[in-house]
Image 1 (tube, rainbow, N blue to C red):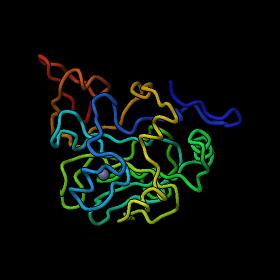
Image 2: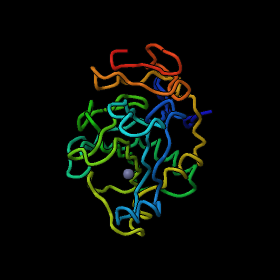
Image 3: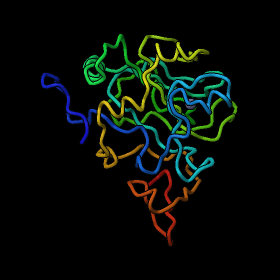
Image 4: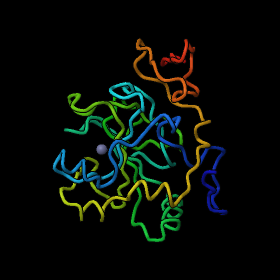
Length: 230
Ligand SMILES: [Zn+2]
């Protein structure tokens, strides 16, 4: 499966869509779009999805994050509460393609990747799908268990914006779960190379079934050991 670009789109050889973290099956969404549990806990509506490694805790700290779609980096920096974040504005054909699949017009389309541990892109950079953006982190001051916060602003809004009302979230952000369904993203991007694990001295230990992929260095029993220079 996976995306087929519009017939008149002249793209290079790169993928047109990539899951931001992989293998996808190693991750789960701990808080979804407008998740009622999130609202109860933090007092504000959730604008997107929180992705975590199934191995839990901070096991995903330093794990590579890649761009979902091609576009231009319109923000890359450190913000209060958020920590490091990257906002990529989708190429026009991506926006049009998503709008067609979602069955409604989109004024704009961005992907915001937040709480990153480190950044490998800067404002103004051009990125293709699957380009390394940085790694999973813990937010400003290490306030969260490591996870990737991902949302899809559909209007030009400040990079650090966070609405307090559900109606604003509905007006300003796409529901990622709806996007995944509408675009029928497949798992082919699991086969793409990933960016490096960031914490170079740190061995990553995980469940063998969850962590198959290009980061594999060696397997001991049912544990996989991988590291950034793999
Ligand atoms: Zn979040």
